[in-house]
Length: 169
Ligand SMILES: [Fe+2]
Image 1 (tube, rainbow, N blue to C red):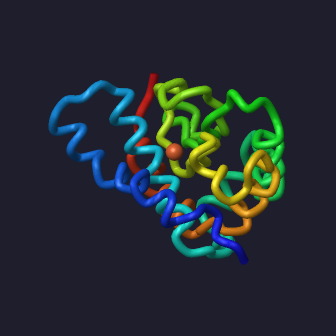
Image 2 (cartoon, rainbow, N blue to C red):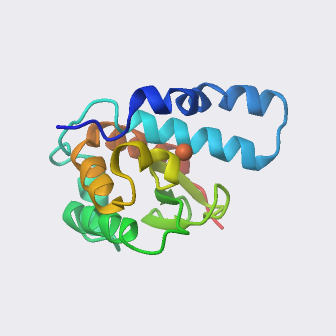
């Protein structure tokens, strides 16, 4: 399987994953922190393709929530990639007030729910796919979902659920 992204071309961008702590330490604008965090999650979730853990937190939350299952999530991600090109991120998050998994589309690094803990991020900026796929965002999306480390998404969701325990509006 072809890599989701061209690693040599994207190496400089991957370093953003290492800059989150630096951005926090410097009290940078939330835009910088969000960009670093979303890229960190993006790269962590595609390091090693791994199946969805059967009976895990992710499968349970998807099946019992508004998304309605792993297949629906994959379909939604591909639909988003095939949609308007001004959408730059698709972000799967745990809403800490409703305990629901939600899938947000954003046109920048900043516009997602303030009660959301991201557990998976799909980079749809041109720099993420242009070197390998040109204008073919559909092919990029197919490669992304095929290369997902679902165990990492499951692990992140499990952590988010622990964090959100007891949080009320
Ligand atoms: Fe990016």
